[in-house]
Amino acid sequence: MPFAIAANLVILAVVLAGPFLSHRVERNLEGFLFVMGLGSALASGALSAPLAREALRHPLPITAAVFVFGLLFLWARTHVGQAVGWAQARIGLGPLVAVTVMVLGLASSVITAIIASLVLVEFISVLPLRRDVETRIVVLACFAIGLGAALTPVGEPLSTIATAKLRQDFWFLLRLLGPYVVPGVVVLGLLARAAGAGAPAASPAPGSAAAPGGRGAAAPVGASGGSLTASPVVESLRTVVARAARVYVFVVALTLLGEGFRPVIETYVIGLDARLLYWINMISAVLDNATLTAAEVDRRMQPQQVQAVLMGLLVSGGMLIPGNIPNIVAAGRLGIGSRQWARVAVPIGAALLVLYYIVLFLP
Image 1: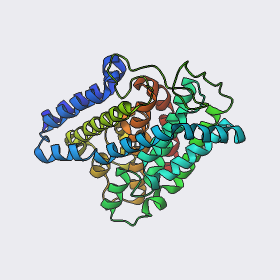
Image 2: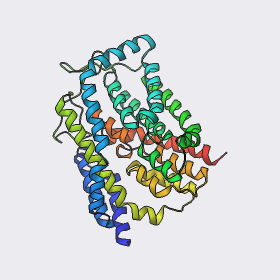
Image 3: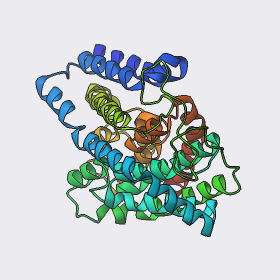
Image 4: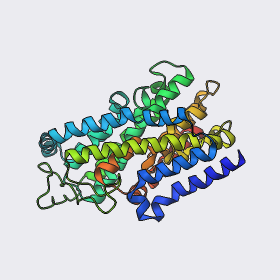
């Protein structure tokens, strides 16, 4: 067990630093995480036939949703562009962005975080935005979706597991987290409005296949062969299939990492004070927050402890691309790299963590 813990701490450091130190790792993030997850599971002795079956089965619903909605949006892209252009002409870019971020954030608890993130990337991809503005809006929206999806058991795996472990009713998380999540989603929507308001439009690339009014699809896939974080490409059936496959590998990797890190969690995390758990759960920026929820949440916890554990996981999950499915989907579809994401998301996540800590623990 000491070897497993030491090996997994090393792997955690590599997972955190790798995408920022190596362009090759950044361009092949899903493959890198798969190797790290395999190594983590091997080091902890967790690799087994049941885990392999679970790792192969777990991504299927997510992958199917990404594929089906990718096909749907591929067909409907022109109509989406026209609808967005119509709405933008009537209420302006800033208000349109704010309303979309708020609606998707709160609706994600019903339509699921996956569907909300797929709608988000299609909405963003037809807006005439500069690259830096687009990235900021996407990050803010993914934070909103990650928060909002936790309000019901159908929104995301974290909320499903928390509700089951606590043996509570369907609306329990809405009552418990709603007073913190709903204002947070509104604030994120207002920040997205500020980012979008008055932002200069980006000119569509010559010959691009963007919808009317859109910024255009970006450059062709680079030498990485189409990594999840490579430059976005002109949409086609091939890119829809490739994106679904990369999401599948990504979720397999996160499943392996979650199980591999279980000895570390059980040794150092379970049983800690809620204030410490809140900050320690920043590791959900690179680990599956559903796994952490399963390890940390217990029926014997007080409501404030559950709030602290879950809010720490939800906010931290937005800070790096592997932290949440919306991040993975949006970064892959729009070609946002790990450095670009972290440059925007880490300060936002840190500010949210401080604000929520004050609200939760310093009345």
